[in-house]
Amino acid sequence: MPEFQKQAVDYDEWFDRHPVLFESELTAIRSVLPPFQRGVEIGVGTGRFAAALGIQFGLEPLDDFAAIARSRGIEVETGVAEKMPYPGGHFDLALMVTVDCFLDDVPGAFAEAFRVLSPGGSFVVAFLDKNGAIARKYKRRGSSSYRNARFHSPDEIMTWMNRAGFGCFKLAQTLFDGKETEPQRPESRVGRGSFAVIAGKKPV
Image 1 (cartoon, rainbow, N blue to C red):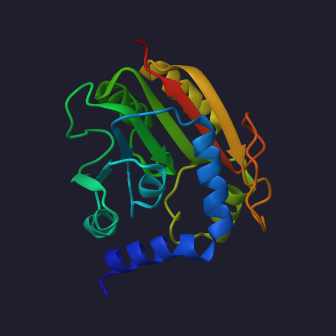
Image 2: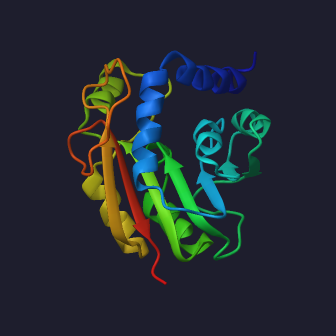
C-alpha cells in the first residue's frame, strides 16, 4: 500500500479505535455549531466530521484522504486552505478540525475562510490546545500523524480569527485528560481541555 494511502487508512481507523474521543469531539463542535444550509470543511481529511455533522462540501489537498471522504458522500475539491477554489460568499459555514497545526499560513487561511463565507456566516475552528495533555503527549512521543505539527493556543486562534474579521465568539472544550472512557460533556470555555472549539461570525 502506498505511504499516503496507508496514512489515510490509518488516520481513518483511529476514529474506530477511539469512539469515545471522537464522540466527545463531535459533541463539543455541535455545542457551538449554528444552523447552516451550505457548509464546507476545510481540510476535510477522510470526511468523518463532515459526514457526522451534515456538511456537504470539503476541501482536501491529499487525494487518498479525499477518496475516502468522497466515499462518504462529501463533494470534495482539491486545494489548500490558504488559497481556496471557491468564490466569495459561497458558504454560510466553514469548519476546520485539527488543521491549524499543519498550515503554512494560519492568518492567511483564516482570511480565506472569511472571504468564502456569506455575511452572517460562521467559521468554526476545532483544534488541539498546545497546552493540553494530548498535544503535549504527541510532541513528547513524536506521533507519526503530528510529527510536523505546530500546535496553537486558544488565544492565538482567537486573535487570528479576530484579525480576519470574525466576532461574536462561542467557545467549547473537552477531553480533559485524554484518557476518557465515556463521552464527555463539553464546557463553554477554553484553556483546560485538550480539544478546544472556537466559533466566530462574519458580520452581516
